[in-house]
Amino acid sequence: MTMKLAVIGYPLGQSKSPVIYNHWIEKYGVDAVYGPLEIAPDTFESRIRSMIDEGYGGFNITIPYKEKIIPLCAELDDTARAIGAVNTVKITDGKLFGTNTDAYGFIQNLKEETGKTDFKGKAVVLGAGGAARAVVYALKQENFDEVLILNRTRERADIIARDMDAGTDEWEKRNELLADTTLLVNTTSLGMTGQPPLDIDVSALPADAVVYDIVYKPLMTDLLKDAKNKGNQIVTGIGMLLNQARPAFELWTGIAPDMEPALRDELLK
Image (cartoon, rainbow, N blue to C red):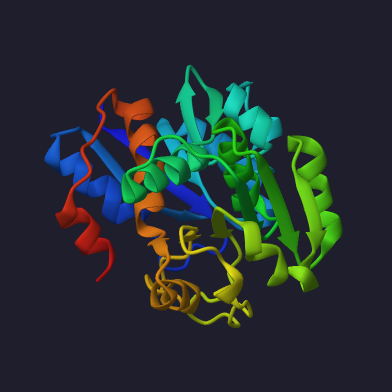
């Protein structure tokens, strides 16, 4: 029987997930179909039950359902439980198994782009949404000496810091706090196409600091341009998107897909 897979969210907009998964489905000859499935909030739970009845094998989850799906899961793995969000579900015998591959995608991209596997020093994370939770979890797993969360609404940063044993400070101090930073990560939508700019001055960053923006539309955000012009190493967000998809595809199909420059190029069109 053909496996039915999807990405769910509301609104979905221009999701890149179908491009990724359908490429791998074709490449590896998997008997599956993958497509976008926009679900309105007032029909969320009933639509999930319908997906089970319709024989779906699994799905990816994006905004605003990464937390709302948790009560519907029969089981969560340790990563999803620690992050407090689910981005991938596998359906077996009518039951939902939830995991989160965002943390893996984030850190794997960092390692591939920098060539480093051992990290120390201070990481500064901008933002306090679902992506920030995954990023902070990944950084804590890598044993950074300090992880500091900065958000325009500090209360949201304080919640993540409490849950994950990280630190917080005032958003207004963001420029001066970069002086001893090893890694700067933007998890906000600021700087994304159609969003307000990210107002930050990277001039205080040490020369050997890495700057990572998980935004990939545009690929080169103003933050990354400023950091590159200053001479800092930069990491774009497209690799995180690809790397977080790999364990999801393996969970559903048993196949660990390769990273391919051609697929990366396709996503950037």
